[in-house]
Amino acid sequence: MNYTSEQIIKSCKNKILGEADALTKVADQVDEAYTQTVEAILACKGRVIITGLGKTGHVGKKIAASLASLGVPAFFVHSCESLHGDMGMITKDDLVIMISNSGKSPEILNMLAPLKIIGARTVSITRDRKSPLADGTDISILVDAGSEIDHMGLAPTSSSTAALAVGDALAAVASELKGFQRKNFALSHPGGALGQQLIKEYQESTQG
Image 1 (cartoon, rainbow, N blue to C red):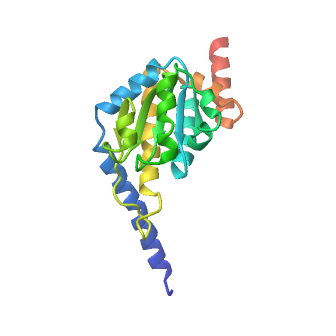
Image 2 (image 1 turned 30 degrees about the vertical axis):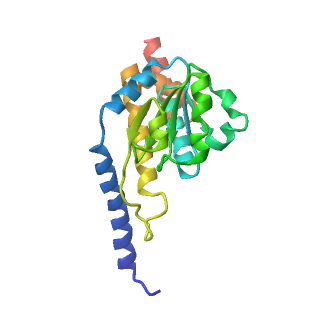
Image 3 (image 1 turned 180 degrees about the horizontal axis):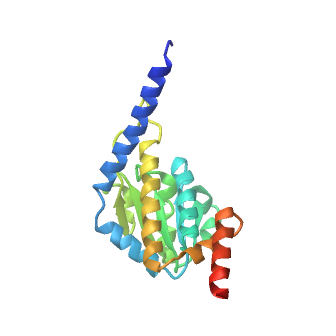
């Protein structure tokens, strides 16, 4: 295939803009389910647990990390591993956020019955509010990002970016409402340059 540098640049720019359009579309879908989810995060007495598999699993790990770094205790449980022992990590005091673009993946659907028995509250993030996963959770967040940006329209691209943005938004809003501050952020990031700077600022302020 013959191509020029200009064609590659133009194509890459269009793909990025395609994902930006997907985020705009998802922003227009924000509704009361977001309020319910943030309130559930704030009321959670245990941990916020993110679960998914495949690309949504990778996204879930990042969302769990964002929550934890912003003052919301959280961790990731892989949907498949949960069915082979890791369900024991989840308690009735936890909030489980379940990510599946289709809302039909058998592995994540198989978590619903034991989660109900455990008593944990559940939130789904899917593109279809009529999907089995959305129907089976306490709260359902719609994240319909439209077409994927690859040339076949198949690879999780727009959909995974949108799920990540939604997770970041929930984490950021919950953190703000919890009153999470710079000094708290320092304790979550003590090893990095920013964390060391913030800890120094906090120490100097207390000494003064």
